[in-house]
Amino acid sequence: MKWIPPKDASDSQRRLHDALRVVRSADGHVPCETDPSLWTSNNVDDREAAAHRCRSCVVQVECSEASGSERIGVWGSRIRSAGSREW
Image 1: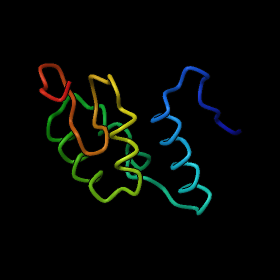
Image 2: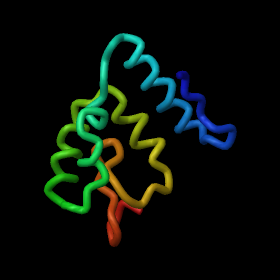
Image 3: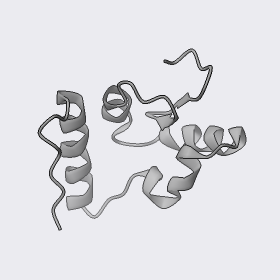
Image 4: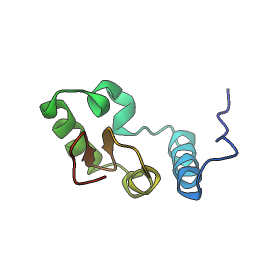
């Protein structure tokens, strides 16, 4: 099944979607698909491990740009959580 971004998706979200499609079409993967629970874990060590894995990701820049107003999780190797200065 093909995923299509919603009509209200931002340009940066569309760029991330396009970049992920290219990776998957080459039978590649991104780190957050291996163990997605790390990227949204309440455990700071899990989020730090996720951020470390992001640093080698081929869509890191697109992910970071697409994160927009996301307040929780790891996006493009940046950890966002309550009280974070990343907001």
